[in-house]
Amino acid sequence: MAKKGKKPTWVVEKEREKRGADPLSVWLFGHHAVRDALQNPNREKLRLILTPNALAKLEDAVAASGMTPEMQDPRKFKAPIDPQSVHQGAVLEVRPLNWGSLSERCAPRGEAPVVLLLDRVTDPHNVGAILRSAEVFGARAVIAPHRHSAPETGALAKTASGALERQPYLRIQNLATSMKALKEMGYFIIGLDGLGETNLSDELTKSANQPVALVLGAEGPGLRQLTLETCDIVAKIRFAGDFGSLNVSNAAAIGLYEASRER
Image 1 (cartoon, helix red, strand yellow):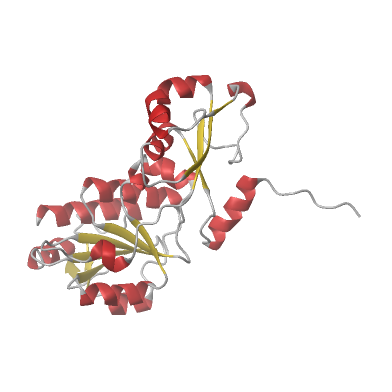
Image 2: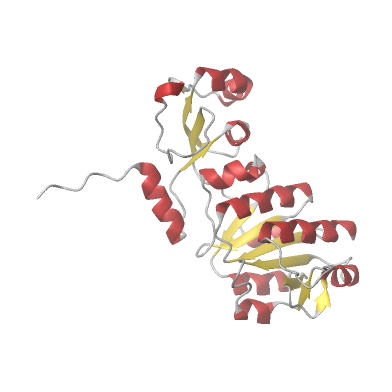
């Protein structure tokens, strides 16, 4: 009986992603993601593969990183990533970032910070977009549980367009426990749900001088019951018509914008 062939690295990583397991290393791809990772002194970099054209575009970042890239012909480009990935001739293997503990990253320091908590948001494209918005609006951190959330992946990093290197993305053991810890730090926790009993803008006005945590759930199932029970209030984004459902990344952007206006 013939032995089964070894699975390609990108297939193994996809399977780890589905299980919610943190990868041992991450293959980033695309000019923005690779450039920002090369320029991040906190990112452990392992292997860089480039085409001549990509090297020309990333030459300064490559030189600053001190790495020696492996050069490949664009017509025969081989890297352990999904063949459908839009890599632009640039891939970089790195270790996942360590942003420290919840208390280290989120403890208020004389101001009223905003953090985001994600409940079972597993789509890396949504999380990548949320990280971009979080960076733009100055969120202290984006927080998600290790299980049932999107780990660092090339797809997430490409969608984040560099924000993954700068915006803290904390992976915690238990969402409800972390919410209680934030409450002990003085955070007012607002769950976002289209059926919320109050408007988000009103709640943010009331809590303008207080640290705030916005909690968003996955599209479809929304926030879990324990998550809802742990929130201080459940609010909705004001909408004009009868339909009030938004993509989770859009809801995060609106929530962060509303919070930034009050701070």
